[in-house]
Length: 501
Image (cartoon, rainbow, N blue to C red; front, side):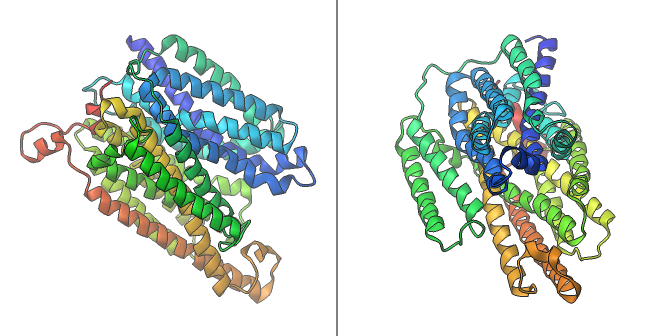
């Protein structure tokens, strides 16, 4: 590909990642207007499914995307994922009932599952074998665009639903996506997939079933159904059962969807684990800060979303800085270690938040949190890609995204349970959702109990990131790092230099 074509291709990847990140956040600010328009009587009850449908379908599709990418070639899968996402977006915009919209969101999620992960594969294959990482690499783009999308997604959703029509939340994807799709067909020139095209559909089905069971347990447990209810117990049994069957299938299949041999590579084994811990901790960084701001500090929901801007700025700036440092010889391993330590310390700071803590202090802590995550999200993918065998680049890339998704789900369940149990034990006897109806001493006690409970959640997140920091210290040094440590005088190359494009 020419230099101009490479620039266009990187622009396509940027636009695709932006679509993926925006769609994860843009709907959250418009759920109430959507439900009131489509089903005024019972729409509110279906909002959780409106959010979960996308996440469930996306997580279920991830393992299959990786194998398809390695067998059919990244370009074909990239185009297919975008087309599926756009078709789902069009159906979402045209939905006439909540049930139709939920089904369309699931289809959109199937395509969305490939937007971020396959795009990272495309970026890796666009780079030359010895090209350094930088702001234009997967790590830099991941941090910059994820931060921007996280900040502007809810704002765009709220603006469109308030000043235009909620259907434009989905229709806005179409012109951008169609332009990306046409340009991808005309411009992208990537290595073709290998000759063999056998897909482990049974393994993909078991992985999807496991992901769906796990996400439903985390979505329903302690909320829709009690943890000891038959529904949750059955889903938990299904979760462990499908996981066992999946592992057995991967050990015996001729061409497994997620080869267990990947876990024999230390870089991949530790990278997957760290990404899962980061995914779980991010639930605390975003969800529970929003709960604190809106419930304890009475910040309006539209204004609370603006508090994510410092976090987004931190991620974006550090995403750029990480690339610059890599060009100067700072290794990806060192970057990941710094990111986990910063996130650990920042969660500890958030854990000390009180009912009257300065809101500017919280903004500063969110900026630091963004800086920590900016050193982790894209950089971990970059590190894993560099260690993955060339013919399994797609599987490794989607696998690390899959572990992040599972981490999100487990983090949501654990943190939600911790918060609910602590508040029940120390609150005034009512649920956290009833705080706004309390007055006097009961209201003051409730706010204090909720703040303390959220503080424990942040301590738990800090503990998870401390474990991630220990694992990061065990990340193997690359050959270039070792050469530098031995005094060879050579600048350490990032792990992505080993990716076969």
